[in-house]
Figure 1 (tube, one colour):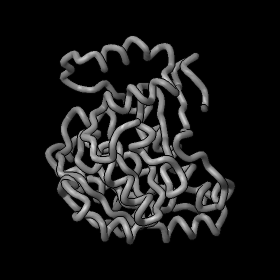
Figure 2 (spheres, helix red, strand yellow):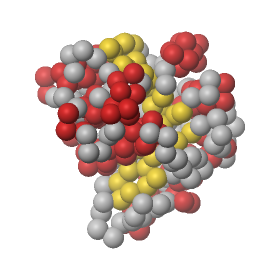
Figure 3 (cartoon, one colour):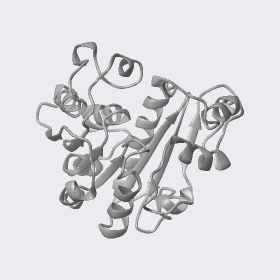
Figure 4 (tube, one colour):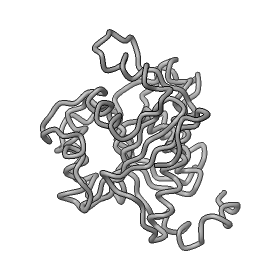
Length: 252
């Protein structure tokens, strides 16, 4: 399956990918990440989510219409196995409510992908625990319109709470992150939408489209390979941002 990776992924890195265990906390955007990681050769996953696939997910997340109504963690497992039937996928079909539910899993994983909802009780504490107490790498990706942003939190980086300028016990929401990120990265074509999102207006949903989700997934795949190859990548508070809208921005 991975025989055509040879010009871009060295054999020793390909072998490391096969041994790498990914903890995927959240299977919204995580559905895209899991499918692409399986395609480049990752074979060991632990996935968490208590949500079900909805019709609105089909336009931005890697699910199919026959999976509507299925638990997202179970659907992600099925999608991984469709790519690689030999993959090992541990399914946890519930929301992570507290760190005690996930501590052992964090310790046994090599990388953590934090894609839980911003308002989750473990949005901040999962990253703090994984990096500061367990010495793990945490990928924090988000798709914004036609673009994508990726943070790497490590034991040596600033903490997620410090980057956001809040206490580690703070209950966050999407605007907490957007207000902070807008200081460092906000393409001009998103300014009006940003003002509307953080103004307190009642929104029935958050606007998202598939290209941004796929872009951040591609970033994670390439950065994981770079890390396994021993290359340096920027860690928080620095981050990677790309916007595909013409004139929208460049890699930061």
